[in-house]
Length: 330
Image (tube, rainbow, N blue to C red; front, side, top):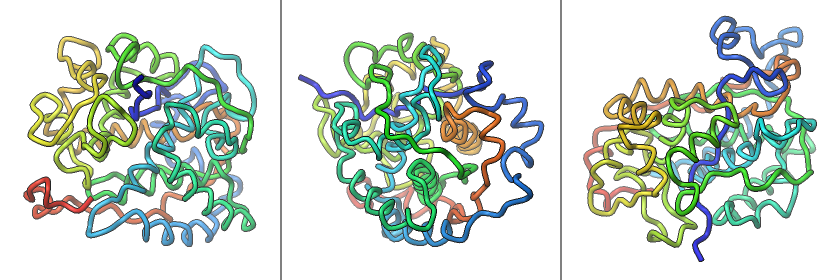
């Protein structure tokens, strides 16, 4: 029996009309400089700079992002991805960005979280280390996920905030998108993402995180196989290579379905081919909204921004892009 997918689990958020979920896109674009850095101008606590330096040791090797880094991105998706607008709201984040994947021991054993056990221990150890200094589990999950994105060469700096309320209540089940089998078709996936507030363009952008992914749980494809030829860097090769995969690259059925140019998501997917700047901007916007998925907007407005504590973005080096796939360190 096939395990459920390593597919990006963030069927999540475009601007929602429901006030408890997350800020409206218009609010974000109209007052981007004021959304979070409030509470009397509260500055990001210095501990997050310490955490950032610590994470870099594990997330970057030989100029490329590591397996722990790609796991951090997936882990953030899986913590927030259990949110759905179709479910009743429960505090603090309706099963969204609340840290329950780390705090409730039953969640990591769910089939969709296969392959994340090592990272769960890694981030759990970091939480134990930094919790006495006021660090929350949910905040650590999304800080680490965003850190991993920007650590990958070419990755954008995603707006990063702290202040979430943690929850150890198990998140809802049955609301995560599969990479293979029933539910991995375009229409089912788009509906699932819309139910979480995302648009077709958001979905097309978020699935691009497969630029750095390698299969660690799917039985339908080889373990360790990457979804584009440069899994150690954050680039748009994933989009082109989903259409024409080179040797060594394998595809999720969900990615194939979403890339179909005749579909709503596929039209946006095709638009990211050779569009690094366009994609990273759309991804960063959607990833930020993912990180506060389910949090009431009235609560989120008082969060403190810690984006400056992340590493600085770095460009993709030509020698990495030109190297043969089996010669790249990942």
